[in-house]
Image 1 (cartoon, rainbow over the protein chains, first blue to last red):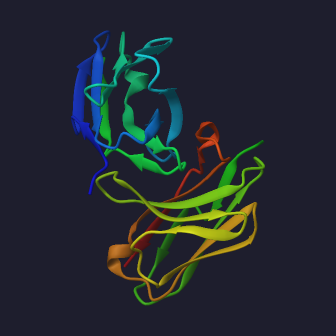
Image 2: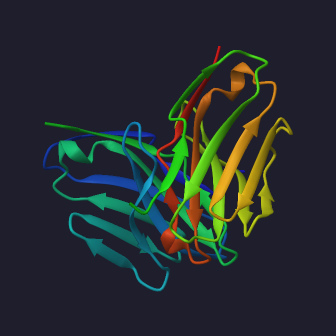
Length: 111
Length: 112
């Protein structure tokens, strides 16, 4: 059973555009929501994360929007660049420190 | 460099063979993990070790056995390799809090 549902599976965006990746969860025991970025041939690396007591967190061009009532959160990449082309994973972590990853989104930014 | 390092990076082997993948972390983390990433990029947790004790064992065939000589090392031994074992295997480590969840760079296993 997939604890965290992620969409879309793949995304193509023009350089300078906004990339948006969405995730949804059901378990209210989750209390930490990180996003990971994975380049080809590398392991996933923590990109940005949010706790459910805030609705938005921004770091540079990357923003997480969090909707606790809808149990949804999304990653927005502003001014997308070709170097952002990677696979992005959302994740949710419960109070027992168990990780649940989404199924990944392959982002391609076209020059 | 502080990191999670795993070896080898690539492993090509024949069906039926036994192989091991090694993982070491120098981050002082107390929990280490093995993940399998299939061709569709889906990350599936296989094992988790906390202070040398197995705390997660998802539905993984018993041909896979994790071995942790100390809390800085978690090796993965695979017996009787099958074609379906071909994937990228990632080691990761973390503290009790989730901020320090760090992945290694992966081992691409190809069974022929």
